[in-house]
Image 1 (cartoon, helix red, strand yellow):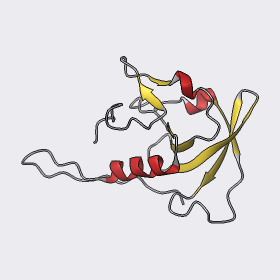
Image 2: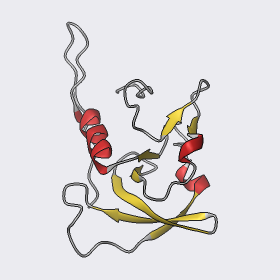
Image 3: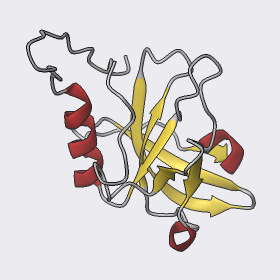
Amino acid sequence: MRSAPTEQDHPDRAVRPNSKGRHVVKSQMSNLVGMFLVLDSTDHEHYRTGYIAAAVGNCYLIQFDKAEDPEERPLPPMELYTLDELNGTCQNCGQKLANLFKTRANMMRWIAWLNEPEKPAGESSKVVHLRKPH
């Protein structure tokens, strides 16, 4: 399994691990409206992509789409998520469930990076691809 990327690996990510491995939102990025995200399922079997369209009270309205064709219509209904839900982590492995990005291009590069094979010197390895939603 690929180790968690560091800030040097992906400086365009809006949410980064701190020195204790916990994820924090950068102070200048506290307004999440307009950010793009990859939201992983709690069992890590599927993920969804989208963007944060608006802040509503203490929640964020998220428009999910299809990463391969974000202009495809009709789009699914928007969904409300609290900041706590967006900051959620997997109960089994501690991995962050939502990854935020400044641009769609940055998000797509991150997805492509996850799917690249990682081969340690002299060893063969297997790529475990993210599963797309049904």
